[in-house]
Image 1: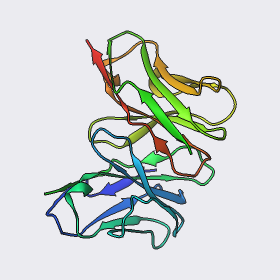
Image 2: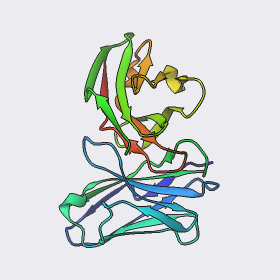
Image 3: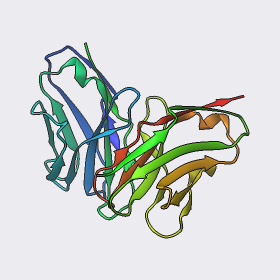
Image 4: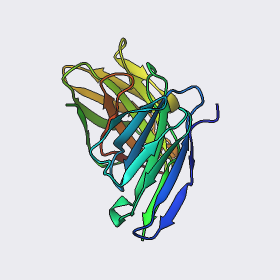
Length: 113
Length: 113
């Protein structure tokens, strides 16, 4: 069990550029979640997958955001045409269905300049 | 709808003193409650959780929390603060084992030597 891995740890991008983040969950976990955390706030739910199916999306997930989990293993979160308001820590977490509590990754910190 | 409120965005205690971090929840059905800790530029680490059964739950690093339904509270305590406890603490609620979590805004704990 190597935990939840996120890549990259930090990303600085210019406004208007596209960015993609990757999350590798704990291998036996079938649920995967994306959260966004801005400075001084708790994490806010974006979306989650059970296996490869995206089961729920938050209204925070605008049409510039898209998430995939093509084979039910790793997941990607893409942000198109980034805006300064997208600057945040993007956290991935995984769990077993029926399990209690997530395991979080260390996050990807996005800075849009 | 479910939510948590963390009273006190900043708490300072002396090393060796009691730590008390407050969390009140709102939920229309019996909740599952969690405390997470976050160190700078890190993801969130599960401290402890309440799902069912015993209302006093013990977690890692000497922390414990008591679920009080009558007070809709789930306060986090530790008898004796250690310098390494300095971090951000988040209370979270979910309705079942797999749905999204709702996090509080966090409490920053400072430990004074």
